[in-house]
Length: 338
Figure 1 (spheres, rainbow, N blue to C red):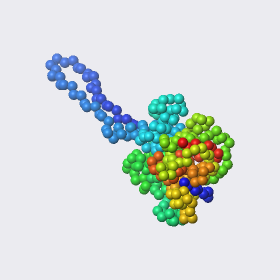
Figure 2: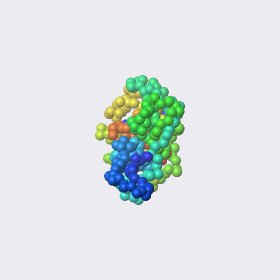
Figure 3: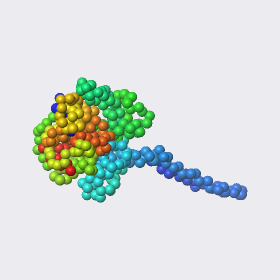
Figure 4: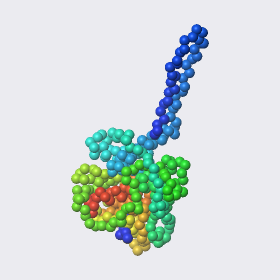
């Protein structure tokens, strides 16, 4: 439970070498015996090319879902649990069987991104001591790989795999990287600073449904799912609050009140630290306060933990998903947790 403050292929085919038609010249001499036909061995795809092709196809499918707001988790060429769940919801929304595979032939899996000075400016230092963290001006990224990974909804490990000759953390402004071709890269520098308790009437028909067991959050518009996200919904020690709630406030770049008593026992103490905003803040780049003290829907300092590590009773999303959900709901949006 948290207290948040206002923010200030080419595909290698099988190549067959075919003998061309011989031009036969009439002759009176006896032709020599015909030699046995020597067929060349067909060229087989290498293991590396096959792996790369499969990976690129997986990225294409992930991008399709990601673009349509049925978020599959990391865009990393690995089709796992959250891809299957997102695909089922996407297909249901289009009246198709849950496991029908989409046609992604027209999707480019990768694009080239030129690193900008603004990317480098997002890199800083994070203290390990709570008192020192509280003295910082922000909770920044600690390496360039994480900046680029979050921007393109992926992992630093996957970026390294598709840029095998590059040390991404040593890249300078102006250098280019291969990245997943996502439709809406997460640009933290363009995320507006917002803190509001004002309702947007145009989003009045929206609601949120959280399935704790499935670890999926759905955004619904008049009972039709329009978006879904993988989440971490509390933990066994601090479960998410089952029931019907609503959003009271929405803030980007929130401060975080680190109180061990609240986190461990649900008891507010005077032994606490205020952590500044930033992508590595414990609640990431977003806090949506529910009408239950200390509970909310928020971002995460490490997207790799989504759906895997527990939270202290809240609903946690990857920062790039948090940036999207903020635009889909409003203060007053009903939240059903079950």
